Image (tube, rainbow, N blue to C red; front, side):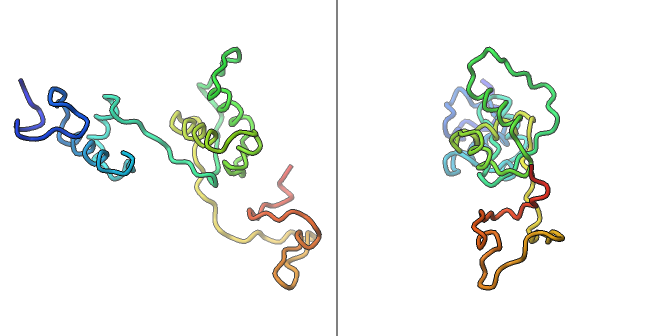
Length: 182
């Protein structure tokens, strides 16, 4: 038998039995690193890319796109997404609802609330949409204070309370421009 990975005294990576040692050295290195990582998860940038590609081709790893509740989603014009309207696939329905309801200024947690869905399910759906290439996580915007609107609401009231709070209105932390909201 041919051992492409090295000598017979080399121990196999965790989770791989002796007859399965067909992995290249970079793939073995990536598998060992993943096995040592908490929960078997690691960032792609910390693994040897050639080994990771081999593991992916063989179906030994899967890629995830980490999504946080505060992330915003960009959905370019959809090409290649066809929804089966008679099917009862909950994930497909969730993806469709995300694509239709998304506003690039809304955070994922806001989309979950809008869709009346649990946040964890929406995070999974957004991750899937990103992995499939139907959506992208928008980079965080600059942390600049909103510009005053000419003739708009007055500035902060002495004592630190925003004008909207003093008038009994809602206070939001996003600094959204009310002129651009529908």
